[in-house]
Image (cartoon, rainbow, N blue to C red; front, side, top):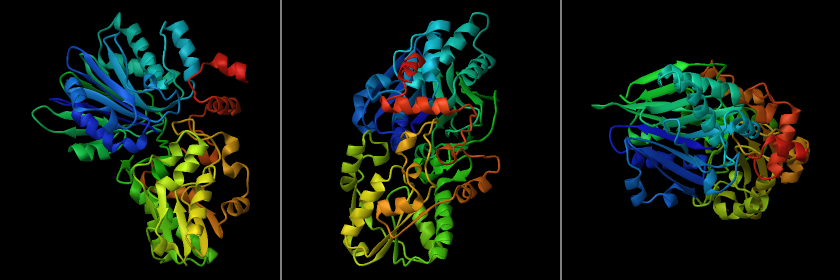
Length: 493
């Protein structure tokens, strides 16, 4: 769940890239970076932490040039150091800098393959560097006999598609040539294209539409599955789908990851979340729960709670106040830190809770520890009864496509029945969304989409995930990252 942006304008691109990264901060809070090209050389600045803390005015001046890419990161592959922050840069062939959102889960094997076959040394533990070397090694093989044409670029990207397993939406700069973007053949992670008209048109590619809105770009469309997009040195746009499979957009984008004001693959995230709530509300009606007020667990569950409230005809209230200066607990690196942060992050409003029967609406339940602490807080505030609704179905499987979820045995739904979970959370009633209802909140609004819900139903859309892959993923998570190679994996197994 990273965020990226690339801008090719007619002036100084880096400040606008900075502004775009601020809008994408929710997609990654561990590290950030910007790389620009001024026509002669690259300028790179990256660091660990929030965007506002990494970049200062002097950095913006140094990041010169009309073309720049930026990235915010939370790691699914790789470590937490600045060496693993994106973008990555190589100086041959041509000079290329690259950033991406997603997860290449065979990156360990590809690191070995790149060293033996392509004579490329991948120094970081980040899969973005693997993608960069896959792309540039393919370019190097082509350029000896051909000039760098759009067809050559397409051939290099197709080689990436054939070798990299997982999900990835990529933006890159090729020195002296322009900006490219590509989206994996199943379009699992989002990517949008925008344009701003002028004497010379400016282009933007970003993870979410909000970046376009804030900078005054008009949205052209989402990137297609398997598409290569190229803005050349004359600001002319070229596009080609080189290996298409399907629209298999991650459905968790609509539940939790994306900002509610984004539109992903033609579907409004906010409207999808409201529909999720209405579906839940329709089912809660049949349970005849004694509910006085519907309260969201802020922030991503607010639209779903509105939908529940609408369906039930029961008032919606803000009963929990969020400290916006605390990072998302879902992406914190340790269960003790996650549990400690809950009271720092949320505080109850006594007058909305005391003496009432509360229906808490949250986006999902993963391990159950966070939900249990929230319920305990609400009960201690004086709630008479506490009910709990999850906008997502039971989560059971790790995501191999870019969300840092736990090992299979750590999902509470793999250990307990729904009744046992209800008892463990200490709630008077518990309901999960169904997978059918969840997909009905998204698919009818883009009939081309067959969204990935592998974390719930175990159906990995790339079709190349077996039990051995999942076992390796579990082992690598236990070791603190997915950056090791296959020989290390075999030793562990």
